[in-house]
Length: 190
Image: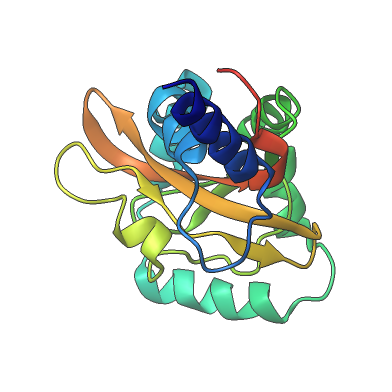
């Protein structure tokens, strides 16, 4: 019995010390973070207010796609991008991000998948055609989506994106995505 416990302990130690690689499912502790911590941020009043404000603008999908082309082709930070980072919601996201060492980026989308606020420039403005939005913005209550681990060249770290629905009165009105540094989250308690 003692040998079995020792063997199980050694396997546990080795698994924690394993190097994370791209293309793998997110580790259990990332799933736990998604459901036990991040899901609740989908009802944060600052985030909900920003999404409601943008949804009230009734942006047309064609206008969003036109903005997306400009966004993707713009080198650096445009005034429009800076406005997304410097808004009340953008500043709030920065505070959330600096509250834990495992956040690499955070961004919020409206009901069509257009950016509302962000901590850093995203590669595109429209997320509405991507799994992080489509898998999360579903049904009345939405769903948590945890993407597989990918190597992010901008941060030089292995990240998993977690998306949770932004909810107002239980209804899904948008999505918030968190880039999680998988190596930095190990051993964290939440």
